[in-house]
Image (cartoon, rainbow, N blue to C red):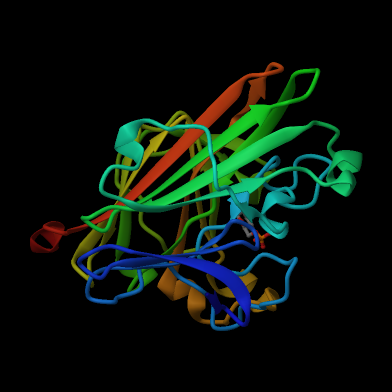
Length: 293
Ligand code: BG6
């Protein structure tokens, strides 16, 4: 179908009525709704639907570079390219498709891409929606080049939250992080769950495979389970930065939080013929922590 102002999308649906929408533009997940029809991902009301620019919201894919540390455009080119549906992907584990509604997408570099990043690759993305409404993204990068190459990667996940001041993240306590607001200086997080009262732009290093984002007001928790991606990026632009972004509302920072499963600190290196897999499973569970407040 076409949505998001005429951009081609694939809609996944489970028997309970949960849905996910995946755009061929950017291989970007545009929407993820539970069986009640509630949207779980944030998309800005100011988002600009003009390919090739990535849309502000959903889950853009950052590849082969994260951020602006490198020679490529910010967050790499994958999010700005038109992907194709992969009708015959190499097999995945049967658990990755059993009882799920899914779509497989593929991105190969264009001539232009090879000029700025001279490495032949195939990037496959499977997006699946389970009978429980969980959303899973599985990315596979294959080196079809004669030489090794390295890349960074992130699922730039814009979670929809009730009010950023009511949200906390569990799972990042006591970890080291690189602070993008301080020239990527390295700090160590304290022992408490992470809460928000100003701009945050950090790469948490060597994170556990499960992270929880608790939304006090909505009494629900996003659980992020990741594999093959050791870092977690946490980003909220807060007031001042929001005002400087043309495709983001001045007050919208209150309703979103980016929590990205990522490989940033240590890029992934693939020898010719090798393949890497990075998985992210997102689920929502009712929160019990409201009783503590
Ligand atoms: C975050 C980065 O992941 O993405 C931030 O850590 C950046 O530094 C943000 O501002 C948004 O990036 P973009 O390119 O989508 O505006």
